[in-house]
Image (cartoon, rainbow, N blue to C red; front, top):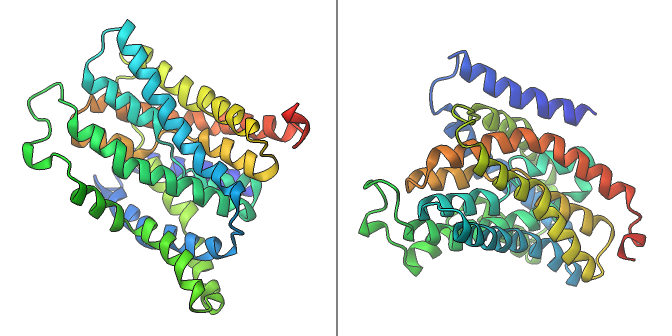
Length: 315
């Protein structure tokens, strides 16, 4: 219960302090640097060495892929029946296909399932990041915006730029370090340090999330908002659960894979849509409203997953 109260307090504090003008515009960027450069890598260095690698970890790795492919197919089909611009279609694909698996996902997984479930969440998050840094970024770069201020020719994607983005992202480097370093050195003396830094992830990440919430103009975007969030918060985790059950997974691996699939849209997806002028208002509204709604829907998913016996749900 204390963890859930912390989540509400941190998000509310971030939103309220920004609304009152106590925090200057863009303050969240400094907090994000701490989270991305220190807190998330510390989580990886603390938990990844404890992972027992096996075929079952393909399940949490598969979860973000299913969510992304489902989002791409959904809005490809939607655009065939309802007239939306390519920019809007890409924006919806981004925010519906990429989950907030670290900033919101790690604190919620810890709150509902305990810290022992975080290694599985880390695997989900890394695959989600790889999709964002490669396929999603290339899609955004190649989509013409609705106004002339879209991506310039110099911003067009190439393999070197995508690879550089992937290999210079601190959480990904932390993940690689957490896999490689234990093969050569004993990290256990540093675990207390990792623990202290990792403990800052939840309050700072959630505070940053609250600072970035914005709800202006939501009524005008309600039809597309509804489609996006119904998919992201309800349909996507349903699809993930059905696919995973076909693979005969169960227990914590199944629960965390579905739970992470049910996370709100990724904040970075809204940032990418804004950067390339892909209906930024719709993208950022979907992220903001999705974060609030996900506090309810993830609770419902937790109750549902716990109500289903780990093996009986396969019958």
